[in-house]
Image 1 (cartoon, helix red, strand yellow):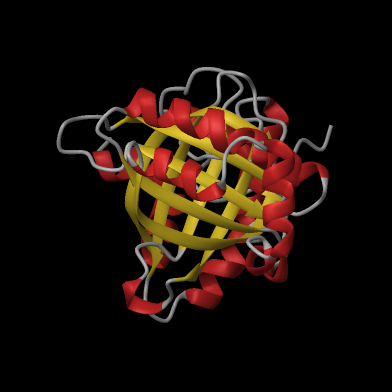
Image 2 (tube, helix red, strand yellow; image 1 turned 30 degrees about the horizontal axis):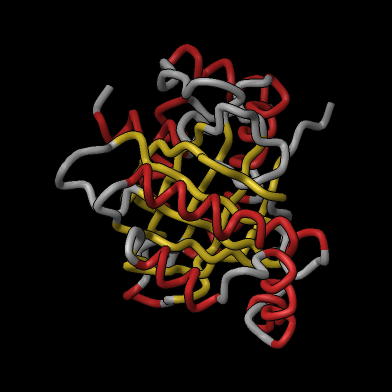
Length: 268
């Protein structure tokens, strides 16, 4: 099996995908698949996502191979400047599994009630879109979780020392996010380290995720209540002082806003 089929086919067959939900296991491994929809195929892709693809992902979740699955639609940036049109994510209950063999994929399709052969499935995926990138990432901290309809801001970071960057995020931002989830200002937050690929030429190994219950909540998050919440959590430290500490260790290079279009949890 070629690499393209191994990754793209497996990703859209729920073998290598990622999730941001409260059901996440302590291991926290997940895979992020960035997909570009081919010109003129947006409606067909969306129909497929809500049809046979959803059936396959539901079968994978119900079997316990993955814990849950979400599809994120890119909101900002939009158009040709967007790196991905969709990000397909699922969450592993333990270590990431090996890509499905043809026999395993056939069994999944049959369990899902999809009549396509494995080759027909791959051909249909190739007709609708292409895999831009895929990586396996691990949560270092997770607060709350996402649900369908949420808005999610993904912050790609560079860090001279990954461990120190993550430690600062957990020390300064995690307790603030926990308070935000308690008072309903946000639905969740996470900080992650990319595990594969992971090399000297792989940028943005650290990322953080802010999850909001609505579009308005996302824009109002840094309003007047922000300072009140911050003083409650960090009375000894101003936001500017905290941001200065984090900025020395973590540089946000790029942010993308997504909407959670679909979410699958176990039907059992």
